[in-house]
Image (cartoon, rainbow, N blue to C red; front, side, top):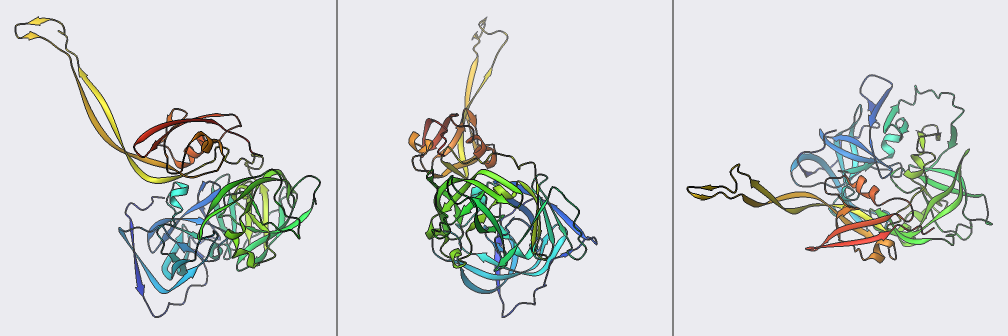
Amino acid sequence: MQLLKKHIILLLLCTTGFIQAQSKFNITNGKDKASVSFKMINNLIIIPVEINGVEMSFLLDSGVNKPIMFSLNPGDSLSIEQKERLKLRGLGSGKDIEAVKARSDTFRINDILKLNMELYIILDQEINMSTRLGVPVHGIIGYDVFKDFVVEVNYSAERIKFYKPETYTYKKCRKCTDLPLSFRNNKPYIDVKVAIEEDKDPDILVKLLIDSGGSDALWLFEDEEKNINIPEKNFEDFLGRGLSGSIYGMRSRVKKFNMGKFTFENAKVAFPDSTAITYVRNFKERNGSIGGEILKRFRVIFDYNNAKIRLRKSKYFSDPFRYNMSGIELQHNGMRVVHEVKKRNSSLTNYGRQTSEGDINVVFEHYNTLSLVKAYEIAEIRKDSPAALAGLQEGDIIISINGKVVDKMSLKRVTGMLQGKEGKKMRIKVMRYETVLKFEFRLKEEL
């Protein structure tokens, strides 16, 4: 999909009411199914959408019940009808955020279409997923799509299929497991079992939100009554950013995690700080969430109409559960100017000879060029991590990692270069203000 070449100007048109919204998405290709390719970035699903004819990219998030739009900049033209202003609250310890309740004439995902889509537009320009993911992301969509179809997510092939529920037939599958879903506020929950530590309750039944918009494997909320406690081996870390600010907490591993007949050992788990999840704890039965690092290990069929989910192993099933051992969280922070000095010389065949006009000399000419390259900035750095102890700081701009210049790489690739086995030596060159600095450290296993 070709993303927006121009920027977007948002025209909020005041109106006294809405045309009644179309109740559902419809398949427009005349068939019983449609499909779309997606990009998997940091375990998240980024799909192409088209709003009123303008091409964008949205995060497919089973954990949201209404579409949200953000990351809009001045430039092109997109007309959206405004209904009212309101306050939204999301994950994070910050304050409520201002939004506009609005309606688009058309909302298209390849061959599926909905008219008069109701959505919320975030007015805070600082809320921007694009910088952390390294690709344009203009919004989030979830329940509106999942409720209208049987949705099959193939993480291995990076493809989603949408089936009409009334014509869909399940195939026999001995390698699959079907699990029941429950719903609250249009969000799907699943009951699974977890063993947190050795010599503890081995079968703690937990209710978890299925959250395809979360990149982590597993989140658990501390609960003394259910014996959900942080394991002894842990460390404090940045867990992500929600609509209401940054989220911090403790990282650790669980002894065992069961989803039907599928079992994971030593899976990553995060325990978010209670201040960041205040509003979600209103649903007291919820004990946490399952994120993209677990979901990508399956081919997943979401069937909201029949309140169930089907799981089958994907090629990622046996991948190790890795976490950030360097302590560095990067973001794409625009472009930076690079000054390059180049040398050009001209050689003459009669160099060193005498002529009637004097000696012949070779002239070396130096000239400067200016280039714009990507700026990858350290957005967060974990306290007492190898990178922090080496002296790296938030705001440092990464120039190279282990001798490889990063300014032409994707954020996904640069982040991958910071990963590896314990003991791997990292040599990082950064720009701090106008000074180039070099640092060395080794990756260290905290758990």
